[in-house]
Image (cartoon, rainbow, N blue to C red):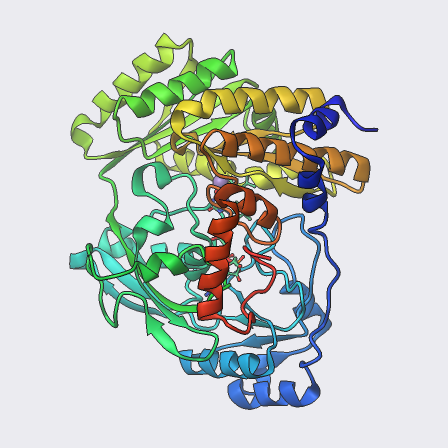
Amino acid sequence: MISRCFFRYLKQTSLADYVAFRSFSRSQQTPAAVTSSFIDSLRTAVGDNNVSTSDAIREQHGHDESHHEVYKPDVVVFAESVEQVSKVAKLCNEKKVPLIPFGSGTGLEGGVNALSGGVTLDVTKMNQIVEVNAEDFDCTVQPGVMRIALNSYLRDTGLWFPIDPGADASICGMCATSASGTNAVRYGTMRENVLNLQVVLPDGRVIHTAGKGKRCRKTSAGYNLTNLFVGSEGTLGIITQATIKLYGLPEKTIAAVCHFKTVQEAVDTVVQIMQSGITMAKLEFLDDKAIEAFNKFSKYNMPVAQSLFLEFHGPALGLEDQFNTVKDLIELNGGLGLQMATDEDERKRLWKARHEMLWACTALIPGSKPYSTDICVPISHLPEVIIKTKQWIDEAKVLAPVLGHVGDGNFHVILPMTLDTGQNEIMKALALQIALLAMDLNGTCTGEHGIGMGKCHLLEKEIGPVGIQVLKDVKKCFDPNGIMNPGKIIS
Ligand SMILES: Cc1cc2c(cc1C)N(C[C@H](O)[C@H](O)[C@H](O)COP(=O)(O)OP(=O)(O)OC[C@H]1O[C@@H](n3cnc4c(N)ncnc43)[C@H](O)[C@@H]1O)c1[nH]c(=O)[nH]c(=O)c1N2
Ligand SMILES: CC(C)CC(=O)C(=O)O
Ligand SMILES: [Mn+2]
């Protein structure tokens, strides 16, 4: 069955868009160069125990947490040092074998899926915190250091790294995807929080994007190589070390929830809060369907309504005044049931449940896999985009909760994909329609999950043919043999 929404989509966009969209499902080819002698040379480079051709290990490395089909690499290599990463890159480059960096596999756009086979390079064994400069509010970590482990390590220093995609991802994987999440509205995304990266280029050379050892807050020294690699999704080189900003733990934290009768009221409130200049730490929207999933999965009993989850960080002095200003705005817009959670355990339980929304939503349809949209628009367009999106969801008659980091103009629709392929086609058409709308309103098709394998066609639309050609030129400059994560970002 094909819905009215799908037909409207075909009318509003061109058939060529849809054909381009569909043609991104591809068949896997194994590079001829992965011979047994090539695998032997990998073993010499990193040691026998660090090379695996086992089916289970290849399967595990052939996918992330998204709905995208599994593409297994031919071989998985575990690196233990920068020197080993460099040797592996060199070997792959000489034989033109695809090389895919693997952080922790929590990505949502099929970034680690080995579309053309080849070598997946797992960096999780390189998991040392190299240094913490508490007085300068920065630290340097190896690529296998995970976000939660870093924050546990930092606890006694009174510092933390606040960028929080919800999943426990590797810090360098977060650099590679330009991750953000709930705290970005106050602390920024990875783009604003990386000071320097050590990167192994495909030919084995090692660079420091801001210069060796540099960790200053400002620089006007030439091109911004650091931010070229932030968001490069493993297509330009392997990030082997990251120097990132740290922050003081907030003296006081206030979390709150409230709900609204209409989407318009909820989203108008968000826009007004942001325009009032109050520094929110978190400002999240969950629609009625998302709350239903939230209640069921995490055993809450919240009113099933359009809801806002909020958090304020700051010095004890003045924080309640900020809360009260926001409270006034909520009430002015018809907000109901405002509840504060200052108790740390309850706050943690609330945000843990928010971060598990991906699983809560897929649990609504047992056996489904998440297809998630990730658009971001200038804040003034947010009400229009969310309202249209929810109308389209209703017309398409699909179950699709809406939630996201609305303080940044960024939200997701979670489309649980099942074996019902007809339904899946409708969901994909819907996702495309939402992305095209965002781009029409000066927004982006991805605020934080990246392009991966699923959104190359949208990137082309977003930055245009000349922009794409320049990206291809940049890629060629770093990776002339096209070995780094082929088929991602630019196809
Ligand atoms: C439940 C849940 C919820 C969320 C999310 C996931 C899940 C499962 N995510 C997505 C995800 O956590 C985020 O994209 C992480 O940055 C991925 O980090 P991994 O270490 O898992 O990278 P993963 O291993 O998945 O790799 C992702 C990409 O980066 C590349 N890469 C990894 N390590 C690299 C390295 N050392 N050098 C070069 N390239 C490397 C890979 O090749 C791939 O292209 C997210 N994200 C977000 O921004 N906001 C959010 O709100 C959420 N929410
Ligand atoms: C699939 C997404 C909803 C995951 C995410 O980015 C989030 O929970 O914010
Ligand atoms: Mn998100």
